[in-house]
Every structure is written in C-alpha cells, then in structure tokens.
Length: 110
Length: 116
Image (cartoon, rainbow over all chains, first blue to last red):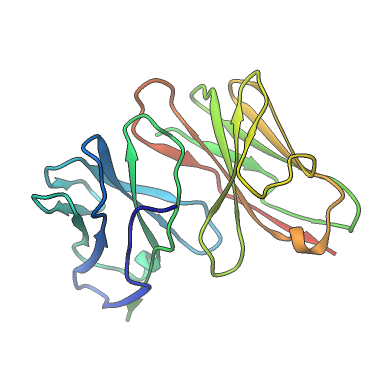
C-alpha cells in the first residue's frame, strides 16, 4: 500500500506558484520522499527527491518538515504544461520498486 | 539522462490473440524492471517485477500465465498478454532503475493496448 496521502485535485493559476502537499506520517528513517508526475497518456516523470533537507532543482523545490511527516512540492511559476497528476512517494534509496498512491491531479488555469 | 523505451506505443488486437510489449533500457543495464498497468483515471498498479535471468515476481491477483514476462538480457524485458480479452485493454508502463545505488527509477512512455 502507498504510504502517502495527497489531496485528490488542486487548481492553480498560470504564472503562480503551485504548492502540492503530501502527508507521510509513517515514513522510516531510511526512506526518501520522491515526487513524480504523469502527464496524460505518458509515463511518469521524475521531478525531485529528498531525505530531510529542502531540495531545489530546475523543475521544482521540495520542502520537508523537520519531523519528516509531511512535505510540499513547489512549482514556482506554473505553466499550462504543468497540468498533470503528481505522485508523492516514499522509498528506500536504491529500491526501484515504486508503489503509487492516487496522486494529486493539478489543473493549471489560464 | 537515462532513457527507458517501450514498444509499441499503441496496439490494437483481436480477442484471443497475444500481444508482446518490449521495454528497453537504452543507456544503462537493469537487472530489475517493473511492469505496471493503469486504467483510465486510476493510478499505476504494479503488476510484476522482472528479474534478469530468473522468473518474474508477480503481485497478488496478477495471473502469471496470462501476463508472461521475460527478462533475457540486462537491457530488455518483455510483457506478453496472452489470450487477450477486452478487459485487458489498458495502459501498460514499464520502469527500470540503475543498478547499485541509483536514486531514480526511469519509466517508459507506456503502451496503450486495446483489445477488440
């Protein structure tokens, strides 16, 4: 079973920051938080991951709470192409088996 | 970045026939690959783990005789849907990770199977 809970859907205006929350209250000390997204009819795409420090790359920022029980994915300037289902996943480093939850369907509004 | 390629991207077949889907890791070797199935507006469901040189490991409720998996090399896994039925129509996706310490799992583009 997936170890994360996410809102079913969210809307965000184009050009604004999209903040996607994720709860993972049972996360273990050796589990990372990963984010993937799936654009319609495509395979999932890796976005970012982190253990306990906040992370940033060219796509997004990941904010992990100090107790690691929740995190937020931030898309700083959302575009229409960011419309997708976003999956928050916890997994042990090096374990390529991924169990997907239901994800958050993000709609970017023009 | 590492790329995983699936072929075909779309296939239509008649009921009762078999369909083979290929998953290739293009620039890295993968001893393990994974096969997922996704129905419309649902999440990805893990079907099986494909192990190079050994038998696949199937998730509970997935028929191993219906979904045949072969992982004959470090860069290729195949999923064969045997005696396809319309209810097998779905989006099939594979993934692979780098061996030994890789942090990312890479996904194929998916294969849309329609059984008529």
